Image (cartoon, rainbow, N blue to C red; front, side):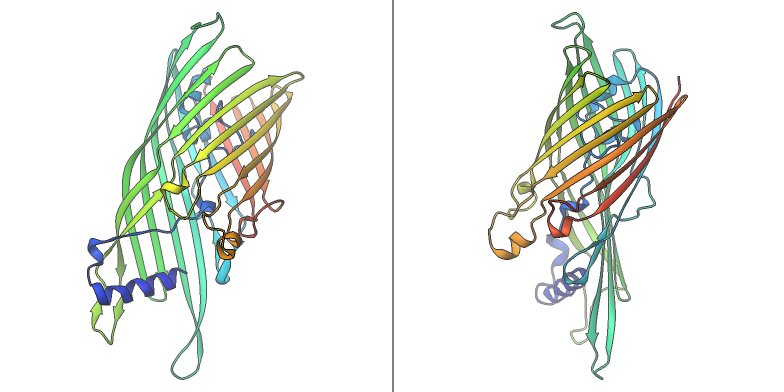
Length: 374
């Protein structure tokens, strides 16, 4: 599809020869979104998250840290065999998926973090026939990433309504960097662009057993210039395509959730998220995500978790093509956390082969290490 996209783009340039003035929308796929709800405590982090993943969580949850901490996470997924013989996965899987550092200062906690907000690798192999009747293969590879370093802070107020309650407010300022790399046959293209983003949240704990949270994160809206080397060329027309403008949008999110301690070392969490996909593409409906997790503590140093995450992105039209391409998915996860003195290690596996659209069937793994300085 990337090859077809670039060919059509070049042919269009022959007629308009004005691509440098028109921003073309980059195609975004839901499977490339990196949900903040993926963590080894299940699928819900509106109230709490390990420090390695705090950059993707509710910034008000920084208030839950009582000592300086730092952590890093890595994530891997299996390939998805997509339509037209293409393959999809995360781009640059060897890079950290997220990391963070939190420094508490009584009523104010501050932090810095990083996460991959969007990551997509696409590979196509297209069979062609030359003028001599011989077949050859053109390989098209596309790598797209939006990665977001951020600054975070939370402010806490104790005893507002009850003697043991606490209200925490949090905000984060991020710089969303869009990196695009394309290669089609001998032609390579690249794009680098960025913009500032933000999110804000609140967390209310009427007691030590229940936490209620709300989070809003602004969507991404970036325009950048895509350049090829060597430039796209149509020999018979003697035309070189100028650098072209591309436009990338990612949806904003509004989420609410609750986390409650149950008897016998069990904690349950629930999150509902509205993802505003219609603002990205008129063909999409806004999406409702549902996530639930349970964490059982066998000991203070050993936790096990189970989680479920359901997403229901659909197209606004009911034609067969768009129905077949629906991106509905149900993810099931299992995780473990083991603490060694000041160090804790988290491992998680998840799978989406049950109750899931064909092009969302995938298995993933995530591993993280967190260190508490005291």
